[in-house]
Amino acid sequence: MDAVVKPLNALSAVPMADKIVMKRPSREEAEAAVRTLIRWAGDDPSREGLLDTPKRVVKAYEELYKGYRENADEILDRVFEDVGGYDDMVLVRDIPFYSHCEHHMVPFVGRAHIGYYPAEGVVGLSKLARVVDTFSRRLQTQETMTSQIVHSIDDALKPRGVAVIIEAEHMCMSMRGVQKHGSSTITTQFTGVFRDDPAEQARFLTMVRGLR
Image (cartoon, rainbow, N blue to C red; front, side):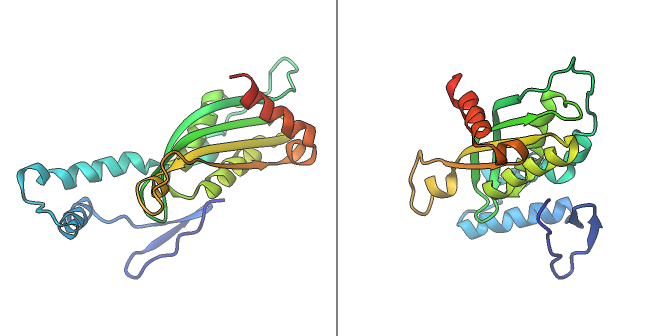
């Protein structure tokens, strides 16, 4: 489930399904905020090189945070039941993603690996990658994103188990703070047979790591 966002002061909030969506500021307000940040950083937003930067930043934000306008349930709403009796693990590994830390708004970049045991059918493989994109294109923590991906697949497919590994490098550790370039963070979450049977966890890890 997505984290609930509390409304701030004059911003009106409209409840929708699993989250609260706040009324977005206008494009002009967003561009003005970028100009303020440029001045705060110590530069002149009216100089030639920065004159159109607010417009470019706002346009980039529409792409970087498009996950707020997407719904994982809709992405996973079509399940294929005719799979010729296949009931073994489905694994999609090395799904690249780009996200932004909700604490510092700097990127964290990595790969996701998703496995599940079908019960009532399978979903198109590209849909799993789109689910990763939906949750990564928001202000996030890696831990929350891992949980969101697992639960969205679990809710939509009702599989016998879901396994997710996410590996990422966080720029908030590489570019600032302790400045430890190259360090990585790994998060995992398991449901069903992956949670209950250590042998299934080991098989999933072997398939992710051992077939490279």
